[in-house]
Structures are given as structure tokens and as C-alpha cells.
Image (cartoon, rainbow, N blue to C red; front, side):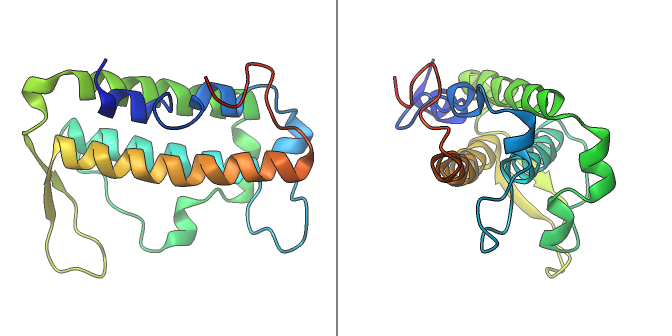
Length: 165
């Protein structure tokens, strides 16, 4: 497994994503430890899965449109109600494994991916598969770090498998 693949499943410079998301009770996944916290763990992971799904669509040649604004990349009340916490965890972790498998296919990493235009930009943005996955790995690391902080604030860190292997 190469370093990009390890970064995508969170087993590189930080705890694996599967560890970060394990043993979070449903009620705490939806909790905000203080009124100043903008998103719950559930909302952070839903946002991660949203962008990961979008990235995988683009890499696989599906021209899925970008959201018109950032609020669309977080769950609405109805979308949160329709996807239970365990299902969301599985969706994100399965997507991360898919992204890591693509990263391990080094022959395809320089393939150009056409990304639908940002609503604020007049043209599509072309990136390689590698660039898409590097961007995804950075995005995932940022939001998984927020999940760790939320777990610390909620008093449920470290997870049973440990915070770092």
C-alpha cells in the first residue's frame, strides 16, 4: 500500500479513520458539546462522505455537479433522519477503502479527471486522479481531526482501538 492510499484510510500520519469513528454512540454522534460548535460528529462525517462520494464520481467519469454553496455539503434534517449513524459510518469507510484502492493503482494516477465547474467559476477544473485523491486526503484529515476534537470534548476519546497505531 502506498503512502497516498494510507493517507486516505487514515493510517498514515494519524489514527486510522476506522478507529476515529469506532464506538461513538448514536446520541453522541448527533450531540454538540457547546453551542459554539457548528457541527456534530454526524454532520462532519456526512460532509466527509458527501465530498468523498463526489470525488469518486468524478474519478469514475460521472459528472456529478458541485454544490451551489457549502451548506449543501452538510446534511439537512431529512437527510440526517434517513441515514442512521452506523450506515453513515459504513458509507464513509467503504468510500475511503475505494479511494485507497484507486490510489494503489499507480498506472491510473496521472489520468486527467474533468470536474464539473464550481458555480463561481465559468469552466470545469481538470485535475489528475492523483491530485483529486491528494485533495481528498487533505480534506479527510482536516475533518477527521475535527471529529477527534469533538470526541475529546464529549469525553469519548481515545477509542477502544487506540488513537494512533
